[in-house]
Image (cartoon, rainbow, N blue to C red):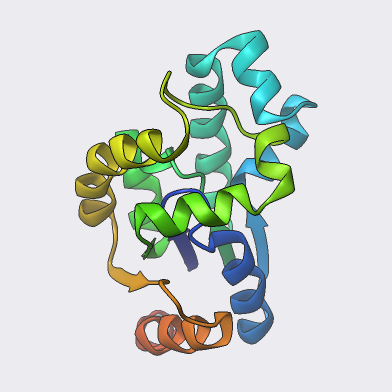
Length: 179
């Protein structure tokens, strides 16, 4: 059983994965960090040197490997659900929670994170808030289709979000563990 967090960049996946894992007594991993570890370079460098298709193929491999684990909280990459094989693997592995926030909040969070620019490439020629709006428009129907539960992260403390996610997740965890 896995608890998988999906959503756009800067919606809190990594922060909440660590907190949820601590509460559950599970391991956690950020899929993007695992991709960078396997590639030996940042996602921005993977895009620049190998191209987005190579990144997406590595993302499929990493997602499949991580979804085969047990008792793991997975912070999935923002674009991972866009591939059908990733959606299937995630839904088969456990419960998928979509973390949402407004485009303006996402943009504010991204610009406030010093590591974003050095590790993450722009995904369109627009960049910034325009890119976020464009990609959210494309991704939101897929996120909705993939998720078992939706959690709005707008103006909520991490501890509040953890409680909300666990309240939705624990009945499914107990059902899986029952004899």
